[in-house]
Image (cartoon, rainbow, N blue to C red; front, side, top):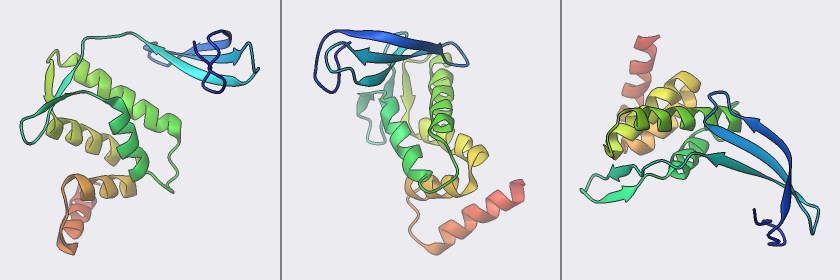
Amino acid sequence: MMCPFCHEAESKVIDSRSSEDGAVIRRRRECTACKKRFTTYERVEERPLLVVKKGGEREQFDRDKIINGITRACEKRPVSSEEIENVVNGIEADLRDLNDREISSRAIGEMVMDRLRELDDVAYVRFASVYRQFTDLNSFINTIDQMKNKE
């Protein structure tokens, strides 16, 4: 594994841990040249999922896009990066369980909103406001009223 600091090709594994569901192995590594430490994640390479966008174009599924969207929604909220990672792992597992190579971006957005609703109300409203493209205050109020009614 190449060191992200000095680009040395050799590193040694210091610690390995598997995730709760066993789908990912987290490895702490130390570069043999500069002695800096870094973390890598190892996961099974699966067949690619294609995301069908609103306009009909297709692109390969990118879990980093979901992580970035959820992270933005959770800014300054009491949500840990581990919780975000667990949400994304769950969404990706659900998508792969569908046994469908193509999934609509709308379905992914709904999955994210369902998980955020359980995780943090404010993050859910933030994400929903961007995802559903709220244009006025009434859109926010309607979403908050729906959340109150479900409690």
